[in-house]
Amino acid sequence: MIDDSPITTGGYRPKNSGERYRGEITLKQAFARSSNVAAVKLYQKLGGDAVIKAARDLGIKSPLSDDPSLALGTSGVTLIELTSAFAAVAAKHYPVSPHGIPKDEPGILGKLLSSQRTFGSGTHDMLLELLAAPINEGTGHAAALRVDAFGKTGTSQDSRDALFIGFAGDLVVGVWVGNDDNTPLRESMAAMSLLKSGAISWQRPSVEQRPSTSKACQIGHWQPVGYCADRTRQ
Image (cartoon, rainbow, N blue to C red):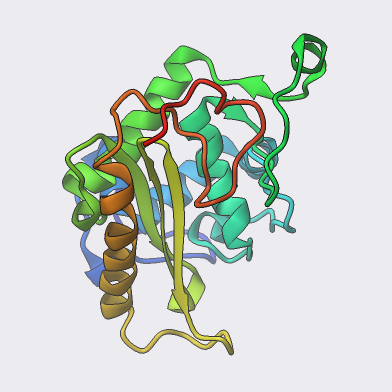
């Protein structure tokens, strides 16, 4: 459980969208509703070192500030970094290294020497439960499909960026909406609707027609190493 109530101490006191608070809620509920205060309180509970280490493990290489505002997107990262991190969860292995030219499958020795690690089954199941919540019951419900889908909507500091990152079937997508000059979006809610619509239009013909046994192993047209050998193609 986490306390989704206003932050009244310290110098950093972010608010929830619309200043809506729900009191004691589960992390799943906080994730589904994109609670700002819950994200900051979780950051404070875990500590900056642990949060930054998790990001590095998932392949985030951009500079990250070690302060509570990191939980709300004050440190800029690239779209491909975010999408690669979600691809790692989809593939159950991390980190995932995106590339434009398909690579040969590694041999037995290559697999043994690989630096990639595997999520524990309990950890992976919890991540999937969290990532299903925004689509099933939260801010990403417009991206729901007839197959299991996982993802997260979000905005960066001052609504300069609006994003949807998610995966379903054997596809992982990252959608960004923002201004080229990095100014805040004028209509953040409209932008969120736009990016979710973009995600839906990209996914539906590609995912829902594919066999449900396909493995999650693409970032758009970027293919991670080593996890697509036995996937089913249409």
